[in-house]
Amino acid sequence: MILVSVGTQLPFDRLIKAVDGWAQDKGRTDVIAQIGPSKYIPRAMQCFPFLEHDKFYEMQLQCSVMVSHAGMGSLINALELRKPIIILARDHKRKEHRNGHQLATLGQFRHYPGVYAAQDEDHVRELLERSDELTAAPRLSSEAPSEFTERLARYINETASPGFRRKLKSMLG
Image (cartoon, rainbow, N blue to C red):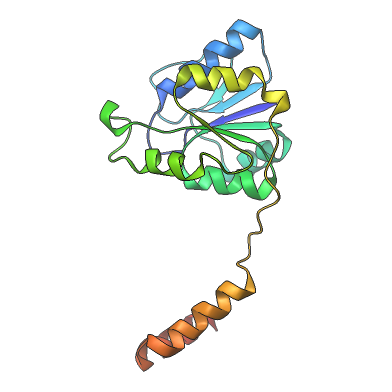
């Protein structure tokens, strides 16, 4: 199964149309999409405006490939679950988002293992053509490495005010 997600805040009809067109051309019935507040109604994909977190997570576990906007939540989930992910950035110049941060995310993850950064809708379709060949990145841990947390603790202890340290300590228990 291929799982498509555009997040929950904004439509991303350009991505949904590209994947739906590919699914229609290929006769694929195993493409499921969370399409948000889309104006485009897919013809070939099973779609939902929104899915509850548990249901969506279950689909993420079952899918073989994820297709998504260049949102950090989607990227992190794919990496944690060891799923290859095709990403297409929303383009703020097309009024798909408020700013260009997704283009920056696409640029940063372009060469990351398991992340397939599409340049445009045609490239999404090309990547979907070889979706059975796409591989996932090594598992991303949901816990920070001890080296990082130790350095962060040293930094806080050396630079933060005593009041901030007390507040942080009370928050963390």
